[in-house]
Image 1 (tube, rainbow, N blue to C red):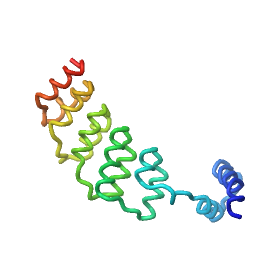
Image 2: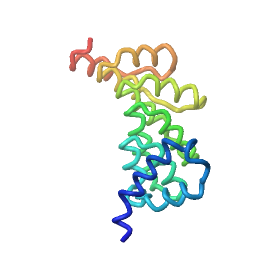
Image 3: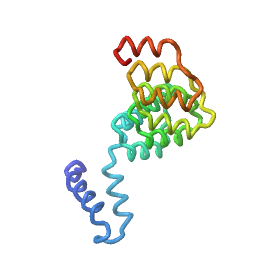
Length: 171
C-alpha cells in the first residue's frame, strides 16, 4: 500500500519545500513525509560521496554509520580528486581522527586541484607532505600546482618529476 502513496507524497514533499512560507509552519508534517520517503538506507557513505550528495552524506552520518579506515581514506581521496572542499570538510568533521592529509594533498596535486592543495595547506598547519605531490603534479602537466608547491611548500620534488613531465610532453 505504501508504494502507491510514494509518488503522491514525493509531489507533496516537493511542493512543501518550494512553498513553505505560503503553506504555513507544520514542521512535524514535513518531517513525517521526509522520513517516509527516506531511501537513504539504500546508500552508503562512499556512494553518496562519489555522487557528490552532501545532504545525503549528512543524513547517513547522522545515523552513526561508521566507515572502515580503508573506505574512509578512499572517500577523502575521491573528494580531493573532484576538488570538493565541502565534502572534505564534512569528512574531517565526521572522522576527526583521520590523519593522512598528506596523501590527500598528493592526490589533489596529482589531479590539478590547486584550490584543495591551498585549503589543505592553510587548514592543517602541521601537514606532513612529501615530494610525491610535486612529482605527480608535474607528471600530469599541472604546472600551476607545481609552481605553487615550489613557492609555498618545502618538500620539493625528485628527478621523477622532470622525467615524467618530459616523457609525457609537459616540458
